[in-house]
Image 1 (spheres, rainbow, N blue to C red):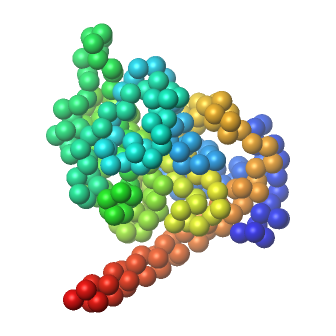
Image 2 (image 1 turned 90 degrees about the vertical axis):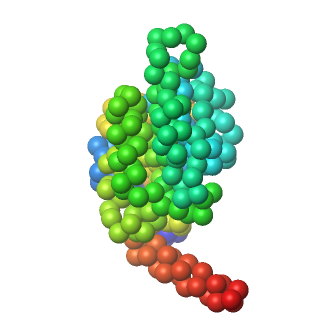
Length: 259
């Protein structure tokens, strides 16, 4: 990764002229099965940008898990910065949101002036605080069906998306196809030093690019940050498959010791 950084071809990314940055964004879009993708400084910035892109009206409401990273670990940034109301939904032990609780909290009485208008559902796969649990494809589809019923968007905090894909034995796009946007962290399981990727439609990403600039995430010769991410993506499935095998071996060993 350090060699890739030293050798990276660079340009001005604010003007879309950094070839290494453009390359990782194209690869991410293909990985997600989406039209476009955007490099972000952090996962927190990626998730906030997604919320702001989907919820352009201040006072909008986002439904998300009460044990989710976006709800607990991101300083309530959607309220602080975007003027968006986060409404928590009960998280089950396997990382899924309780679908009855989710649907009961959708505010669909607009234009009733008493309520915030629900516009977005946020999921997390795999789920950090619930022990790395992976949401099954069938569940992703169930949430998509609810979202479509009420005209809502879905954002996936996929910080460890490729871990989930390896666990399920599918391509990441099979998970993402039930979502309108997705974030992927390069600096967690993938091992790059910095960065996240945000995917969605071309229109969504164009809007996200403007928001990224507003939040201070517009960078110049940023290819040195994208280069290690390209290395991470190239070896992602191989390395994470080995990580999962090692984790299972460790868990079995601990169980044997406890017995």
